[in-house]
Image (cartoon, rainbow, N blue to C red; front, top):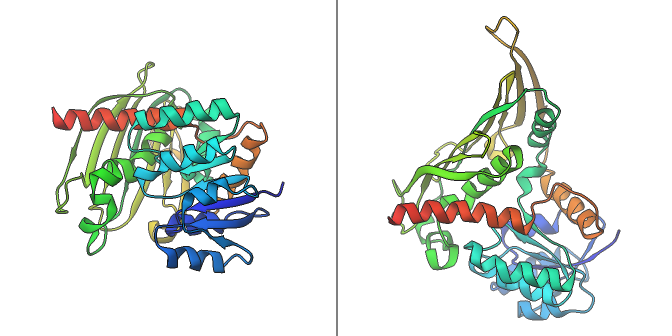
Length: 327
């Protein structure tokens, strides 16, 4: 299935999206930084550079729009693309707050187009295999999840757009923490905030650099999540505990280390478990897998992609955590 694609937002994520299009063709790009847009277009012969994103989403030769902007523009650009009749893959978290998603969802229903949210971690092989094992009953009943995710920023991080609440909507909980919330919901189903803390420990900024949240499902399943911008050595760890064993995913490739899944099977006599490891070295293919799955969704197929409803549920948890901070 060949699709003609436009990308709005040509930063790091926009470039990753462009390089993961497979047989699709990038026909137009737009960015507030014209030079950045020109560089991405130069990697894709025949790709046009538009000075205004509105011209991109209105182009008649565009079938799919990928939105990879700052958080304040995600929902407005996605909505304009939907109203122009395009299928949309909008980068996580899709908005700054749940209320911004309601008009987008309504427009998608009215126009009959597909909108999915770029929670690409669902397509990392270790996490996909872990979920298959859980669903297949390898752990027995799910008890709880524990996850950590973080990096240490870089010089000047406190002056970047993520540190401006009017643009970002929040700090690390909306940046990497929302990935953990989405994964927790993907493994455990609907969850609600029980408690936690968001705070700024190191960076001189008006948004949080660390977030600790405790979530609980109706069945009693618990998720304990920590997202950090003071994780001086990049870290990703996602643990799933069942009554018959444990799954642990470490690393995401690159600076986060080789992606690895470990399955600890509890023995009847308990004691040290039987352990099996899988490693997934090489390039991060999650972007490519996610985009291929998005195209399948646009054709009416069932996929693992996150929906607007998933994004709204994750954002509701974030909003509740922020509300608790202000109380």
